[in-house]
Length: 76
Image 1 (tube, helix red, strand yellow):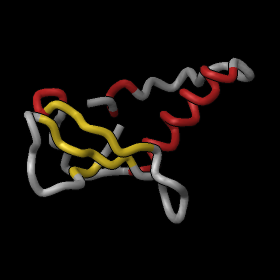
Image 2 (cartoon, rainbow, N blue to C red):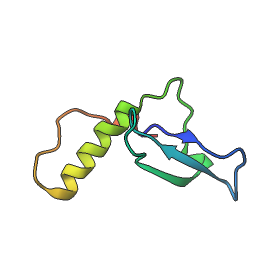
Image 3 (cartoon, rainbow, N blue to C red):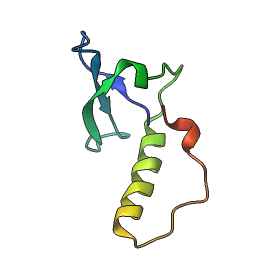
């Protein structure tokens, strides 16, 4: 997923990362992530987050099949 580092300083090797959605929608999450688990990307696209969240929600609800589209390239 695409996220934004939300605080100015790293704490114990972790950064607070915010995972937003497009427009006025609620953010998906803000969590601590180890610096070595992060990857710098040139451009953030929150619509990618919405697609991944939708697939995750469907998986949890088991109401609809997950898309055949491979979004793994967006995971960092």
